[in-house]
Image (cartoon, rainbow, N blue to C red; front, side):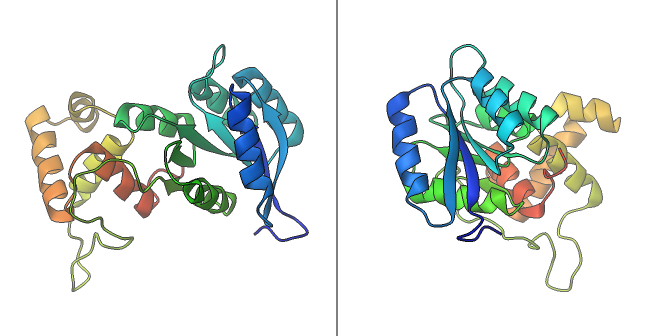
Length: 220
């Protein structure tokens, strides 16, 4: 855990200088974190990450040349222990799925309050994952860790339903899951519907949130 002596070392990657300046003021204004470098493109982000090995990289998704997705893949391949947070305006699940597959530990919307990013930096620096609470989802509530159990300790969802949710969280389509599990697409849809009903999940982003809370995506 970071201390006043050993603050969280943060690399900022964004092609807009004004954005970087604002982020630097925000981060350096915290007692437990400090900016060690800034990058205006993906190539520079990868270079600084390899050289400095920061605790956390705050990565803009939409950068010219090497974008945040490609830069994240390169960083995680070269320095797997470096945590990456995706900072983006895109709240749809397509972007979320791609960045999770690339290896990000956090996903934060630029339009969210600054405290959301600070919470994410602290979380991923401790080895946890963070998904922006402002990402759209339609569920009336969201389960907490361990809520996949019934009151007497029995699993609320079956092993196969769990397997389907895991694969959905990683962005696989119903057809891909059916082929992987050697079942019909209809069977996959039934498992998905049953699990979603039991856990009160309302769409792909809710499924990803649940997977993060269960720790299913940490080894991806």
